Length: 388
Image (cartoon, rainbow, N blue to C red; front, side, top):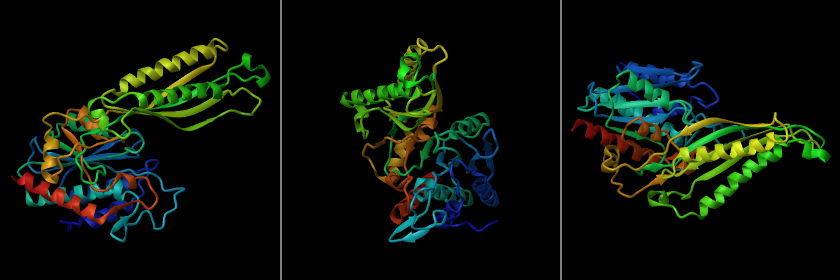
């Protein structure tokens, strides 16, 4: 049987794989599977449609329901265009920090979860410990739903609590916003701009749709939040366009324009309400365009749809995480995670992991050594709990 690696050694190995979402993660998945099976832990792999990426899940302890599942994602964001002082694909320790892409988001937690799973198998636990590692979280939480479906369809023992280890500074997070995204393509009709009333400018109609989003932001900000929604920063639903492209020349009404629209929706409002509001506006603008040129249109393709994580009454995952951390304060986050997807599938779920989200996606990303050690102490206490 292979010699177990320390959490630090596991982190160094995971960071060495450049698992940017646009590339394959299979080298990392292969290594993790070989490592776990080398310690006697069977692994199930869930492929994407192209079979160039995969998620995996594994189980240690008795084949029974009621255990704890540690959830993480394998992909990271790109480093291109960022000014790094160190090799992003190597862990470098400086001034009490471990630098490297993914150290914070979220290979630090993944390393701890793998370490805990091997220990749970080696020492034996009364209740199961499980691991789930997904792909393509950073581009819309795309890998977790088919992995969860596969777990449930295969009869994988259902965990009583899911802990998603996104960086929360080891605080227990019980809520996050839902997110939906659309790829929008506007098709107009080209004429000379001196005769613009006879054509349709895709750029200007796209601008009208973006202006609608801006107006919703103003309205949302002015509306007093209700209940737990007041805990969010900001405590309102946000609509955002980060990229736009279109047009041929300054004196031609644009034939094409494309942009991406993302919405981060308060749990109390939900994503369906905002999806319907957007569709109503898309249809209204398209009808106005087609009244001038019947071939004009606005196509809106859903890119991702991540449900919110909602605080639960009598939440076993929350009770466990609070017991292990001693944190009893309310915490929510505005970023989306796979926690909402686990909750939607019927799992009691919280977010709790080492590191600070402000470091995620940054050049010179790091996790503080103290946070990494707190995370190790957390999973060590979890192993003790699973022996009780």
